[in-house]
Image 1 (cartoon, rainbow, N blue to C red):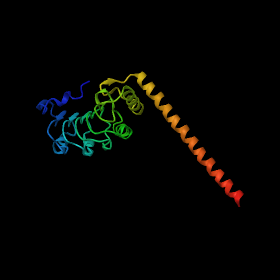
Image 2: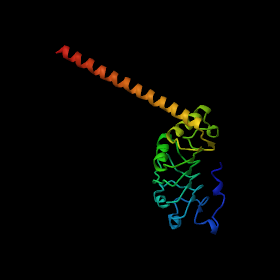
Image 3: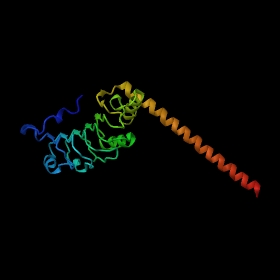
Image 4: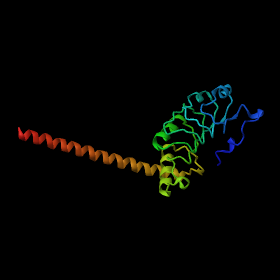
Length: 205
């Protein structure tokens, strides 16, 4: 899958203008809502890649038929806030400034409940061979994302298979179980220490 395909055209043709809009390579610092929101009933693909955007795209919630959102090569961080968009099935946000994977993935999971394709390559939160990540880091990254968004069919440039979902569930169930067990032990230790101090105080009296 090449997430940049629709960004090759500078502007859509008249025939497809109500379904696809591209504002790529325009040095934008703000989302051009004035143009975008004239097509709320028909727009399906919106390409805002290769700009300087970092604002929360709140008004995109008005695009009720949007299925593909392309935000590659902008300045979005892990803390971007998307509107709730159940129509969106594809999000491309490659090469931004995303470095906190749990925060970002939770936002994607909550705001795009029907997402099938997510591409976030060349972000610090998505380690791979291309940005200095190890194979172990890459596998862990994929398993985490798949475990949180099990409906994904493609992550980055690789298909998500059923065996990937099974492994992701198994891995992160173990992690959660281990964390819960560790927390119970810590709580028990704290409680035991508190009881010892209380007993010691009683005996001193």
